[in-house]
Image 1: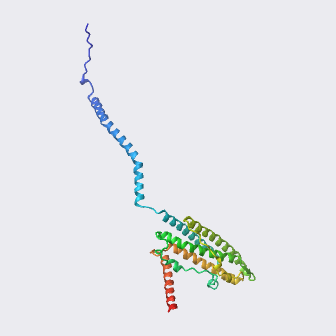
Image 2: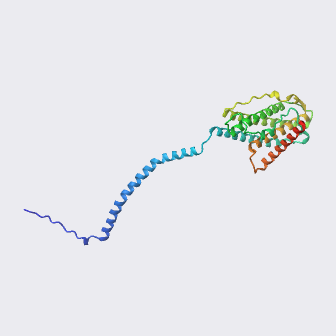
Image 3: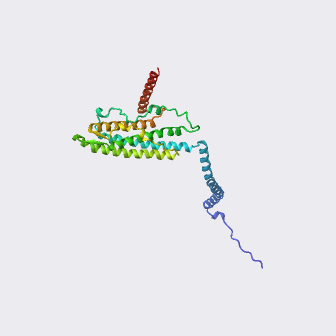
Length: 290
């Protein structure tokens, strides 16, 4: 027997046309978006894999464009640290010495025990002529200036230590008030001197530079008597404090005022003073040679 299965007929007219259109649009969109998203995801993966390589390549190119000399950087950093320490030492001393009632009667004079520093020669030193060919300007400046700075500070360390041990005839009653003031000022000054000298030595060793030997016997300390009256004590103290303050000012100006620096009033005044001294020195040399 042949049985026929009846197939129900589908009436398209009975199916909602709007639903049919919406279903067709969804199918088309799905067919279009799926390959696109797959390509987008794969593209992102490839980009992420390449990104570290690109970053490394960029850094390598930057390094090739701007090569850095580590030796130069070391000298610059060491100079910067010493300059910062010197500035603080100067600032604290300027504050501390305000307790002194300085008068021209006591602070003027240039005794033989006071060391002299030739800042004219230091400031106008020609760094282009060097005994070490191939060295940078930063290295030449450091190796020229730091031993001189170290030596001059060591000299005042010796002087202030000697002043601190001076025996004073206290027959003058008003002077008793000054004794405590000078003791504190000398102690604070020496402590900061120790710290500054140590900073210089540390940074010299950081660039493999030998600490220069210091011979205090070259100072003419015999003329700085260890037993004095109140008047002579005041005079010695004020002369030493004035000279030390000038030393710190000149050294700090030397570091912050190179010859090619312009537009700074303090530097202009410092350089003008040294140029005047340089001119006077040449004039004296011509006069003595004629």
